Length: 471
Image (cartoon, rainbow, N blue to C red; front, side, top):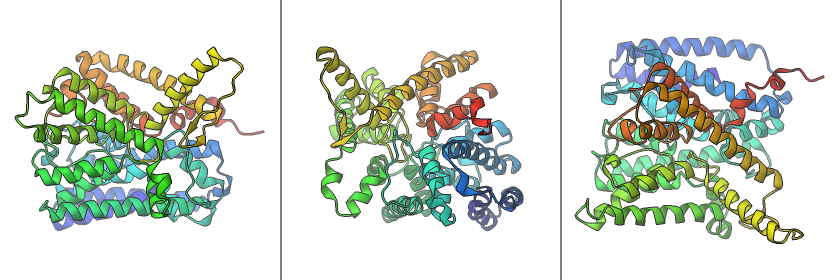
């Protein structure tokens, strides 16, 4: 994993060399050497991948993401682009977890190579770093190893196997991911976006992290370019297993998927509500529709791109925006939030519980898209939401020591835990997270990791049972 991170730093180092960014070249070279040195040491240890079970899979994923972020922040810090290491770490965690939150007050002041690295971490974290490793690692990944790692890194209440072998699963996912990214980049270039911007914006859209290269996010781009971004933000919020079904010719399963249909329905309803709520702000309905569609697609997919300061929108529109932060995208996509499938399971569990109260002897099974949802998955969703709520409340209390207003703190935690930024108040589209103390940035950084890894892999690190040797 470390060796691979070093490989991924070579392109930004080349960009730095071409653009004569000497400090960046040196910082990337030093970090690459560090990655290769530690990576080689790990490879020499010859870990037995056939002995990676559920516990090892979760721990590997959690520790890998922490190490990736700690090491990935070094180029920012060593080059002096971000003089404070905690701020550099915050940016790197935000990138890898596809949150898009920033503590920088002038994004455009970053060297081009650092802008590229910042956006690429967003793309790499979208599909998952260890899933990439599964796609290229030896065939031992086709044992239980690959499944345990994919379960820990893939978002959603369950993991769908597209084909029997996990290595093939990973390759299919990354192939679809890369092709969609390339198509989006090509369309943006055709519609006159600068190549560097098109690549970086595509990275931020594909990873649904919303990291770009301009201070105003996407406001400076043309309407046509913003429409392309809107469409792809929504597309990247749909489960990639649906695209596999589409390519396999299973059109019925694709177009009748309950989670995808619910996701698109939520988007449509939200756009209509915000559009009518904005009718007094924008002179024409088409402009209100465009603003509403862009920001609904951005927030529900957890991309976080903006074209205007929605802090200035009416209360109803801002409320919808906050609700979309929590709902999030589909399971199996690159989006954040609770996931639409969990929302569906919660509603169906509630309805089933009410029916049981009325008819105690009735036997009803919960189904999504015709498939039976096991009791274990339903219980897992309820436990997840319960722990999520506790972490949210605890984080909100912790960052309140900085004495910022409630709206800012509430949406800052929402943005971090749901991997979508910006929020409202001081962390809104026109603001950033620089107003928080080092302590609060560490809390929010931890929330980003917890949100991206969906709680349990991180919690296992703190369980004594995790570190006990089996007898």
